[in-house]
Image (tube, one colour):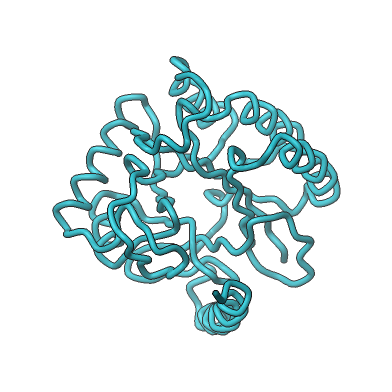
Amino acid sequence: MISYIIRLDDIHDRMNHNRFNILCELLNKYNIKPILGVIPNNLDESLNIDKKDDFFWSKIKKLQNNNNYIISLHGYEHKYTNQNSGVMNINNYSEFSGLSYEEQNNKIVKALGIFKKYGIKTNMFMAPAHSFDKITIKVLYQNGIINITDGFYLYPYFKDNIWYIPQQFWAFRDIKFSGVFTFCFHIDTFTDKEFNKFILNGKEFLEKNNNKFVNILELDLSIYNSIKYKVLNNMFNFLYKIIYKAKHKK
């Protein structure tokens, strides 16, 4: 079975609100339940596009309660502190990897405190720059977060008390083999021309593949904890990393 998920990074109160609204309208039309990576207290100035939306949190809460969007904790401040690439080894900068348990725990506790203040519930983490380490994983689990949207796997993968919801692609792809596939998008990094093309391509892709999209919180993850899926995940992870490194070789 082929299952698709959409993941949207860098959702915060000064993002490009018009683009976000356009995309949400498209997703709602096809009843797609994306993962929203919401930054609790954004201090990354490069992400500030529009004026602050004073109704941002009420909109996020509505999307969660009324539209069943999955809200993921996208770090705390989205402010990079070092050049540690973490276990994913994708980017050489991080908000979490390389920091002490106390520092990471402090960030997660404050981030969850902001979510709680606005009535947002989550058990999922989305690391800025895909960078987290074993201490991050320990901190997340001890604070009630049991899912991470990341990992080059074919199916959800259970390790160190955490479920990794795989994220393999940064563009829509028509996959021909079974698996759970997440498409990751940063809508504010597009030029206007690129965003318009993304919406047009998105309409075509969602129209064609609407029945393949799933709400990850409605999946029975326990079925993926068997030896069969572990073997398939390890094989896919090994091959994917070889291909990824070859494509991004400097």
